[in-house]
Image 1: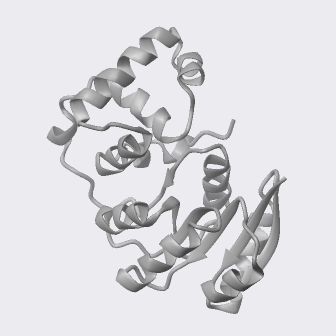
Image 2: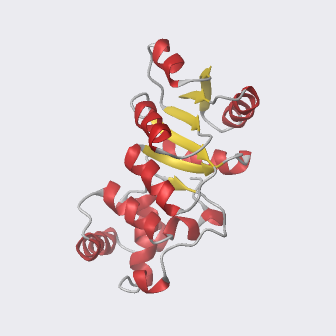
Length: 207
């Protein structure tokens, strides 16, 4: 079982997030508090920390960075575009969901994050980078990037895509070269910028 902490200022939000997390498979909600200082005072780490933000700004992003010291952090906020989401990623978030949180979306996000991946969700009306920005990637490369960002190993990606692991390794190498990304975290940020995670929200991985 993975331990979960919930941090939300509003009592109703704490109840909502706790219930949603408690129904996710393999998770146990151990701590529910209203502020980060209260979480600090618990003196314990958690596998997952869910943080709800009233708004996204420098002050709340500092809270995300602080929460990330306690465990892999999922942030719920009313996102005003990919730039805010990227700022949360830079601050240490491993998952981003809309606020108020849809229990089903939060369950998917928690599943992805517990497996070491990243989940990004935001309103469909939010624009992503123009299509030409991703024109340099072949369809199979985009698909590979999407699964890498979701936390799958090259072996698992190969199985999902019906390819050999060596071929996936080649795609991953090409991606790092084309995108100037040197590690998984940088590839994930690029996937967000290109809207590739948003493309697959309807079929987000659950296994």
